[in-house]
Image (cartoon, rainbow, N blue to C red; front, side, top):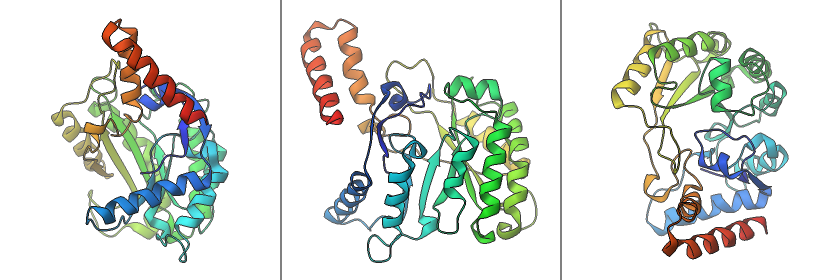
Length: 291
């Protein structure tokens, strides 16, 4: 899981990094350094080498598109990292409909669209910087899919599920309706079975909300997640639920940078014994990141 920026300007309300704001873009070399470190760590621990790379860490990748494009070229270069093109996925909240042009070529990485809700008002609550309607963003994605080779017309749609916010079966119904044009665009090359469980080329990846310091949001119940997933499947959509990882290190989805925010929160709460250490750690961290 790679980061493309230090911080993020998109301000997603469920994301610790979004509350950090943007510090700076990473260079292609800095992005690739993360992959080098991950591969080395696996080797040191006697683990199999990574098979997939996802741009789902800090930052909005398409706000740093040139560096991400250069990094993806190296990741899929047979003389460098040699990952398959479909093993490298770039996730975007879709700042504009035109941002999907990044994917509109044969050698582009796999696509992940951070949707979270199919209702415009609810999505703007979750992604306050959203400036375009979901219909406009979907049209941009459809144009990108049409420009890709038929067998590479696939997309992952990501939804962070938050208790009593967007985890109801009605929310699942709205997402199922939203997906139909995308599924139609992808189905020709990817459908491999009949019936409501067939794989359509569009995978909905459900991500239960991970606790973030000072957030008012709560994780959904397992029952709500299961019901959401089942409703999507009943509507003919392909849906999976992501297993949470990284919780212990504040590195789980939407929780990156949470440790620094907890330090700042401790200081703000007036815990005098922690104020000096929290302020010093936070200031030193931000200074380092800015450098």
